[in-house]
Length: 115
Image (cartoon, rainbow, N blue to C red; front, side):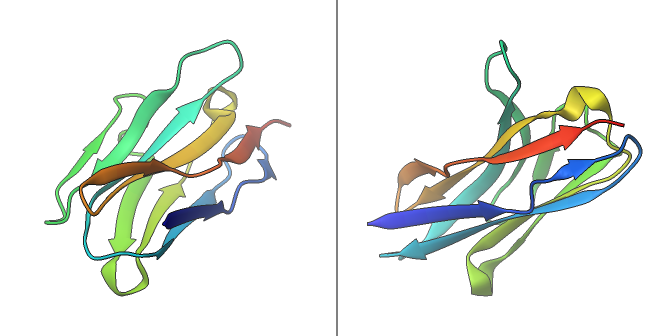
């Protein structure tokens, strides 16, 4: 059994910053890719950023230059540093992690960007 827990979502003003965390726990032998997705009301879930076990990263065009994904393998944790936040970044953010050759979703954390 593998469990993912996100944290760090909040209400923030435009131009502000947030740092999301997602920690994996349970029967973990290997963690491969770790990523963040988001889903805004009335929209499909979309990839925000992903990081491989080797440290390679990929970002959605809409967040390039503003968001940074990183991971701490010793803590089985992935982070998403979000800067220069915009109202259109408002969504539920989900971590998506490949553990032991299976993919798991976290329950999500709400990010709201509003003045």
